[in-house]
Every structure is written in C-alpha cells, then in structure tokens.
Length: 198
Image 1 (cartoon, rainbow, N blue to C red):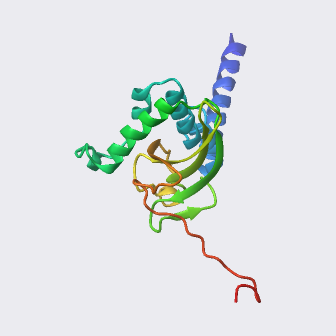
Image 2: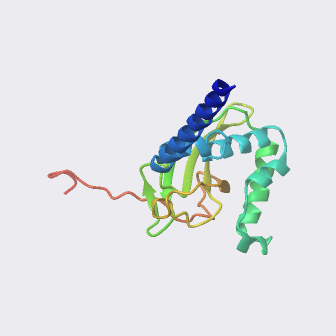
C-alpha cells in the first residue's frame, strides 16, 4: 500500500517538475514556443496559404473568403478596393483552376511595431509577405503574393514577451499588382564595395 502511494507521489512530482521545466523552456526559447504553439495547430503563415490553395482547388469560395479576412474598419465599406480584390481574385482563381501543388518562392518577415521593416526571422514578426508560384490546369505558372499577418496589430514581439500569434490572410494579389493591406514595400539599401558603382 505504502509503495503505491510513494510511487504515485513520485510520479506526480515528476509530472510537476517536468511541466515546470517545459514552461520555463518555452518562456525562454521563442523558437520552441513557436514549434509548440503555432506549428501543431497549423497556426502559421505557410498553413494559411496551404488552406487557401486547397479551398481554391476544391472550388470552395466560402472557405477561401473565410481565410482571407478583412480588418474591421474596412468591413463597413463592402465596396472597398480590398473587398473588390478579394471577391474578384477568388472568383478568377476558381474559374481559371489551379493545381493543388504550389511552390513557396520567398518569405519576407515583417516587424509591425515601432519601426515596421523586413527582419531576418519569424521570431519577432507580425507579418509575412510570401511569394508563391501557383500552377493553372495547363501547368502555366502564376506568381502571387500572400500577405499573412497576425490578427492583432501591431504585434509587439520581443517588447511584449513574444505572445502567441494568430495568423490570418489579409491580402492576396498577383505579383504585378501592389498590396492593399500592407502597403509597405521592402526596398533594400544598395551598398557598393569600394571602387564599384562610383
């Protein structure tokens, strides 16, 4: 009887210590927190793009509309350019027909607080501009941008202890058009080596 009680107490103590250690690790390691809180429930930008492409491939405009959320201030104006783009582009993609496979060409991670800019990793990002190559039914490529941002903006990242992010699609557009939701465009500063470009 005592052996069972001691065993149960040791087991519970191990669970408490293990859980405390995991919480401590997650608080101190943003990459681990991302892996545990955003990857398993498929709450990351790549998963949103995958779900959108799947909805288009399934000829399911309602699911595509739900994935492409428009912020509250624009909701009152159902004739806004973003609403118009959303309706027209989803219809165009469904009519055109796209294949299930696509290629993620590039991701620009954006910090959205303080000084919005392109950053080197997802860790402090409140937005992701993703360049994706879709294929129509004939195999012709279509280059499209997905602007996937956290629902709550600005996302304070490191300044707020990197809280959990809730990613949503805010804009989808062909590469020959400009963004409507996140109008900032990354323009890198070109630096020349001495003796070049002079």
